Image 1 (cartoon, one colour):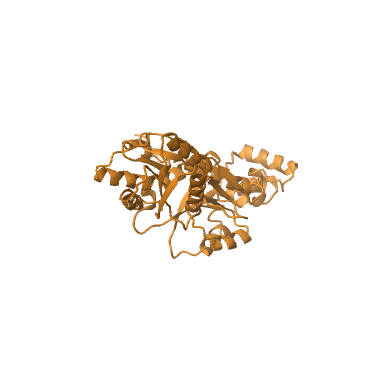
Image 2 (cartoon, rainbow, N blue to C red):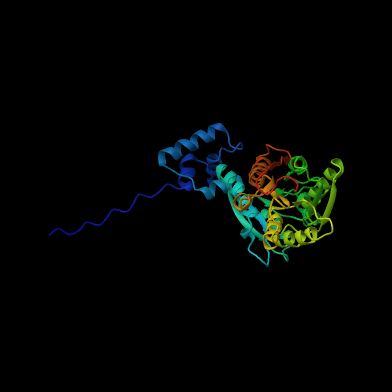
Length: 345
């Protein structure tokens, strides 16, 4: 029997140093050629590319990103709540869908960063300075912009989503068009007494929606009733109790979020109040539960997934210097009538 011959070692892969040595350039020059840097002359690029082709050299992603001084990664900053996981609410998965798809299409990645109450904003500045991320997207932020001023002054690339402030990059949707369509819809149904459950007024979204509500009440000469809220289902349930047990209850209740509207629907179900026969309900956001509940929820369509996509695209444009910051981008809202709105009883 013949002895087994030893296996031949696999051929050694060409390295960046091999290309640099044969091309007569520095290793860093090879990396810059591979990302088509404008700092390298065409003559040197041709020589390096020819040697790389002859050696079968394949540059690593890490080396290419190092030459670009990029990580190709964005940090999506979402608040960390003690009472529930952040992605248990449909808003964040919807926003993440838009951001991840846009980032992947452009060759970027998204990393989730949980924003804890004790975290200071200098930590985010360090993340970008240390090349952990190329930029940051803030998903939910209050109408207190002092923490962002340092980031803006240092020209740290970041985008606010569903929030805005002069001098900062942002993507938001104006509530005017969608809420106006909702008002036209319920007024056409004969409603004249309108109840409204506010959102958390520490946030610009809640402030803007309340402003538009009050403007439309005056424009249509309607009777309004308001109660405080915080976007939650619990605030919708409590708000419905206050509104529907009043001496002159509204015939339609508008809310600042779909979750609050679901709270209204729960209250009505528990107390034998028929929707829309006894009272109509309008939400805000058009997130996925809205179409699945019964009756399906009439709601203002807030393009959250599109906002996530546009935030990523805006950040990429700023990094590539194709867009000059600061940019405030405004998306449109609309209204989706479904089963929770009907004629005034």
